Image (cartoon, rainbow, N blue to C red; front, side, top):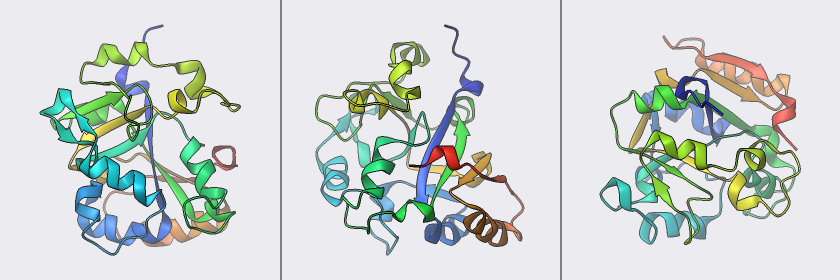
Length: 206
């Protein structure tokens, strides 16, 4: 299988409440920066802490995972599932306000920042990291693309990590749960010079 970086989509999930801050900043900051702010957190606090203080990325000067902006290689990630189940402190069924910010590997690599590919959940201690594009062929793509990923949660959770910051103009699409959220997003971005397509992508949700 030939994997062309520009054709490999990557997905960052965030709450719609965070979009105004993202717009004002001109893009996405790493958790290391956002931890100092009053942003709406959607993931596990203890795993974010682990990524900030324990797990390092050896191929990127041993920097902590939390110093990178994380993307999945698929929508409808296991993390979205567990958030929607109410396991991270948010109410069950909360996925409707979460949006997918979509880019691609080619754009990410072209930023000139340090980057890495994880072979599974970058918040797990046994995960391996690589900063060569040929690592893409080693990912478990059947698991990444599966709708039923039981027993393959780690592999489906593979990540593309971009050091420190990902600019807003690198985002190509915003996928939303429903038309109400999509209209809200469109209203938020209407005055910005870069306006990705905003689409209802119900199959990206549980």
